[in-house]
Image (cartoon, rainbow, N blue to C red; front, top):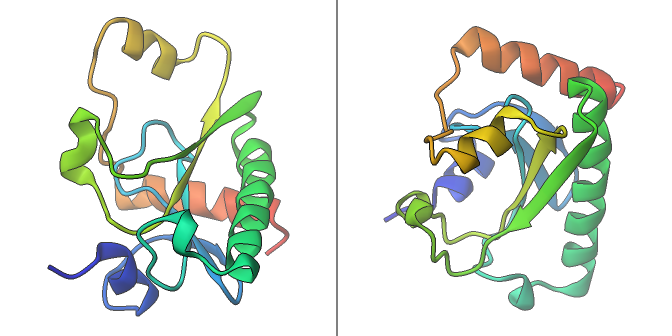
Length: 145
């Protein structure tokens, strides 16, 4: 089975790209937990950060930090969760992609994500194309693009 992230990097699968550099790509999560939920991925396929060359790993982490700043500015969130799953073990593992990726999830105190977790309400929703476009535009503006 083809890697979904490799398909996006190759341009064969559509996704909302908000930033990229020589080694990394930042895209909106296609089933976000909250608006602005962004994924940062290496352009080359690696199953684990332990496999990555130092230069590419450093570039990836610096891009995660850059995207956190942009996502916070774009969404007005007070903070962010930064997550990286390796060999997923959660129920969402059905969604797993065996390609290194970091989640940048904007958060606020007592936000909907927190309330949904307390009540065990499924959080992932499929935004409309217009909603994706609006969030992507705000993040790009926060990056100065």
